[in-house]
Length: 325
Image 1 (cartoon, rainbow, N blue to C red):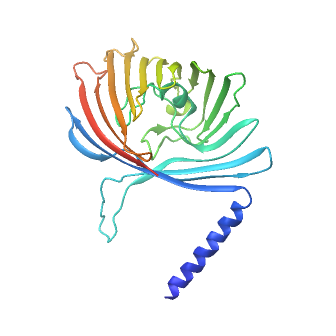
Image 2: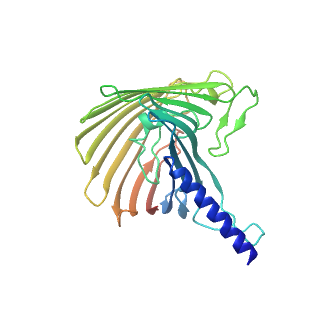
Image 3: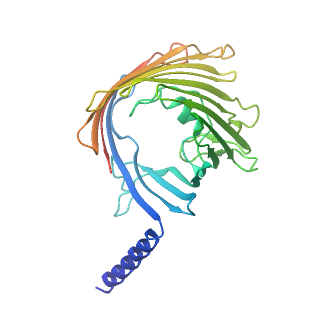
């Protein structure tokens, strides 16, 4: 009973604190999603799996009439099974997906922390649009340890720049979320965008300085999206990574009322210096169906090639469901 009274008192104090801050133009929202997918692959058989379920909290507060401070913290976790590691409670693996703080106003927006890179958002996302399957893209810098500036739109033009810093540790480290090997130093990214009601054009550059001990290979790209109707978009992109490979991608997405029909294609052409590799194609298509405003299901099918000679391709089909809250 005493514990209940103490817990109630603490909860009441916390709610009072939140209410007080809310009165000072502060808002905090909790959100998340649960995602499941059943996959069938010619190479890997079948599997029931989590597809990137997340839990997060975000909020903002006014600094003055012109500037707003904001934050976001989001974890990705496995929701498909409980892993009991010898105790009475199940253990679910989780890792950081996004976490950042920032300021925004008429000057644009500045963020510090971890989120999708500006290069990925501007150049790759429209083609790599699948719910579960993936479409090959050029390698880029990892997420995290990044300061990013987003300019306001000026006559349709936007500028975005980012600096990722890994300090001066001379030893290679492993990114806990992605498994990528990272090195010390600074990596820079830049994006120039222009958009109007019909077309959006983006140019992007990623130095990738933290991806190799020396002689890192930069990636650059261009993406063009045309929207001839409100419910139809068509995208083409070209990417190249120095002395590694070129990527030509195409994508389309059509909203039919109860969901979307979409498809993507990418040709990967390794550099001539990659003598053991050959050109290959990756393509996939899918359809979503909205059960209500919070829940939808989808079906996808795709074929992934390989740069390794004589390795062959793999066909995968997916049925999935997502609930957003």
